[in-house]
Length: 151
Image 1: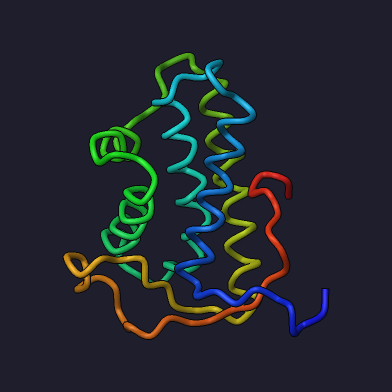
Image 2: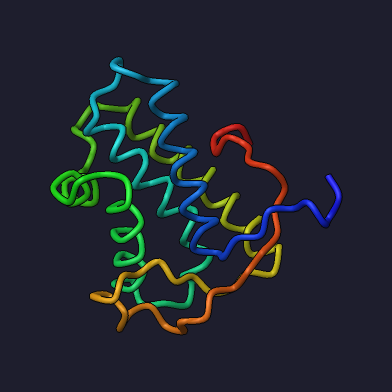
């Protein structure tokens, strides 16, 4: 694809894109075979990994606020809260291993985003603006969409 046809998005839009793609991939891959609550936890861990590199120098509360803000774009608040507080049940090795894998995938994709020159994320609504930092989004270029878990 030539540079003049590349899609231009802010880092916030790019992270939102990857999150939506990951959500669709989880639904396709697991469907009704994995409860929605576990899918939400997987999605939260993926997003945590994706945003960890962007928020590496931020306070943990600011990173958590960003994760919460992005998840609220896709799932209801009560599910977001449960997903962010969930811990795999003792003996649920499948979920524990899956969480590690999806967080690692998100982390790799976060590094890819930063390698493209993006270094600011603005995912917050005005009610969370105090943790958002600069209000100027960074625009990055990317090729056409790929599924989030395909890498």
